[in-house]
Image: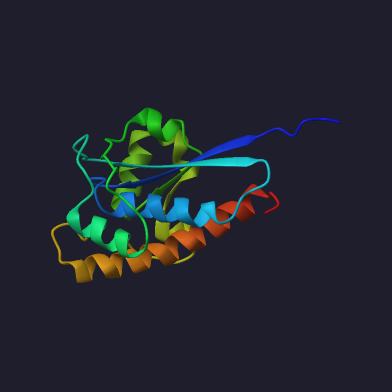
Length: 164
């Protein structure tokens, strides 16, 4: 009998400060994938920001709306994106087309794995930045992210070609 080989994949969500959108998207992706074990595949989910202040916690709005969804972001700490992060990742999903353009300039050899989240999820536009806004705005952004992330993770699973 032969042992099955474990395939490891990494998905990186990117925004500006890594305290709102990318942190929420990563948490939603982890929750989505936790409910769908993939046979022979281990998926690591991470987030970072193009202009993040290393170690910043998630914004108050992000903490509130994710807590309402049963997700605890209190342990989140912002991470500043590096070229190595992009190069060591299988799929990079950005919150805006401007983030996508910046990453493609930063790592031109990796453009095939960098996508705006909306585009990868089969729609268009940017995910608006809720930073500094009220909880109502955060809830709208979180709801949009929940749909986008679910669509993106479905596509990711299909693209992997593995059994669920």
